[in-house]
Image: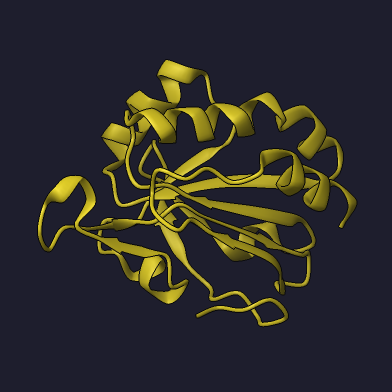
Length: 155
């Protein structure tokens, strides 16, 4: 498991317009990685909207939000447009990033063998070090959004 105090694993993923986004693009900024199981699922909708509701405070504090799921760029694009999200949603279709961050969930929706992202929130500082990590007991559990926003805003 990627632990607090460790260097965050590097990655490059596709965003909703199919362009590449890398963690290294945000060197010097605090980054919130918000892993979510799937677009258009009730709890994920609430989670991404909670980050959107706090985007002004986070951006003002120099923090960037990146949502990560195993959904396609097309699904993430529709999801982003539906909720007018002002942060990037990234597609980990080969599941390498959810595996490297120990953020996998197997059997979402009762589908045996289906690997999705679990609901995991990781805050990485400007030097690429993991400073905060929260893992859901199951994908239906939400993080304490105020705690995440406060932590990322004061890092």
